[in-house]
Length: 234
Image (tube, rainbow, N blue to C red; front, side):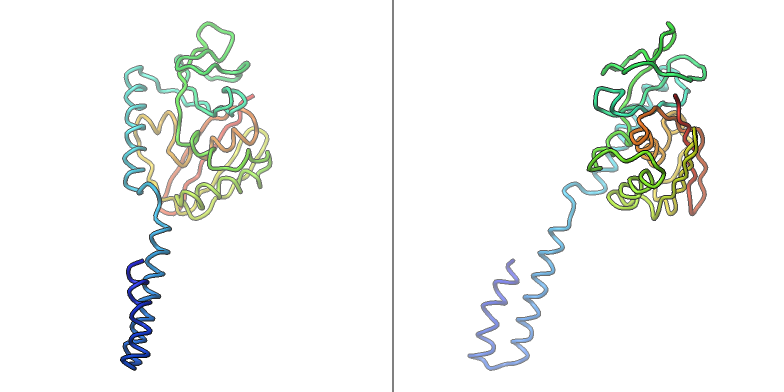
């Protein structure tokens, strides 16, 4: 703003009083530079990427410490907001076994019951995918095109974590191909239970779109692309 005001005052002085074309050109150029600086300042995010990385890592390490302390190794089940009191979350079963059916709505607590059996207990946690749903204007449709559009909007558009996303949908399986992923997969406890942040976002979108619980069945990563297989549960 200071460049614009100073150059706006100096430009007529240079042209009318000093009668100098070079100085007038410099003043006009300074106005342009000032406008560019204002535009660049307005595009700066409210929170820097470094601050976001610190917050994400802090939450992940706290959740990983909880999982490791409880000795949980089961795959997380991503639930849509309709099954979690209007807020999408993931639950991690406390007992080993293959979860095939989740009955009813899950209460909004840390330790929850997801089935009729006495051992059907789990802990509910918030994931990067849970928070990413808030970036959508509304729940995506149940088709592969709708899921792909929502995933591309978040991963390749808003968060800029990938170059492109491709989704293929079958009866109980969703294949997600993410090209140009900018977050590397780490073989740590958190990722083994909840998946990588990119897989977590994809799973949360699929769960919300289909209105069913899903689970990240497999992840494979290379230098150029990531493949995520998501299982749809009844």
